[in-house]
Image: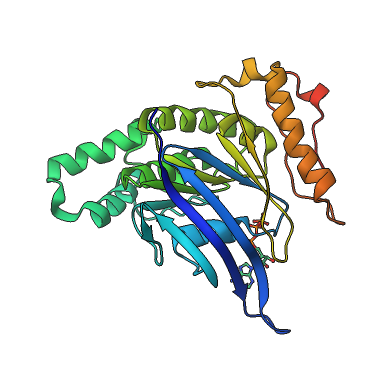
Length: 285
Ligand SMILES: Nc1ncnc2c1ncn2[C@@H]1O[C@H](COP(=O)(O)OP(=O)(O)OP(=O)(O)O)[C@@H](O)[C@H]1O
């Protein structure tokens, strides 16, 4: 696969106004992401993961440094960077189809004919296995299904970068596993560049090409980057017994627990749906 650098964070720092003077949440964040790469951000609660994602999304402006996407500086939100949040954020009065349609019309306007628009919306909902529920309202479908629609909406914008802020965090373990598998399948087909925040160590290892581990704030930065050299497609059951998989998992846990331990209990989920979950230890906290 041909890969080239296309997204880079250069010397990113951000300060938020605070009563005692500016609060420096991030400092000297440097990261280069290649096209088609799947990168996850992991770190203790409050270290600044969402802030990094929001800066890439153009929702926050860096105080110092900046983000370059395909040679252009990012300074506002744009459809080439679609965001999927933890809580779906669908409009409740619109059906699954109409929620995706809204985004498609915003991005493509009149560039697609009516027939093409319809086909494109259906295609994206089918990608996430929601082709059977086009006319359902968000209130009529489960949390996992809503999240699928949110992902379809983001994919339908044909973004160059897919930004996901704990997209499966609110779901039960089984639904989460299904959606992780769907996401891997879609990414293999479309070769999207993905930046995903997660608190789930298994999710990070299973999905990522690289895991970016952040230090605690204030002035949080990238502590270590772990390259996950596991061939794709990846199979969660086969990997549960794979020593390399367990090594990567242990590396992330070591980083979170030894190097950057906080006095309070870190919000880290180790929720392995594989049969050896008992042996591996249910909770990282
Ligand atoms: N708009 C803001 N104004 C002031 N401070 C902010 C703002 N947004 C974030 N912060 C602060 O910046 C730091 C990083 O927050 P952020 O939400 O990015 O962390 P996080 O790693 O995503 O946390 P979590 O894992 O709990 O979601 C925190 O100390 C937070 O209080």
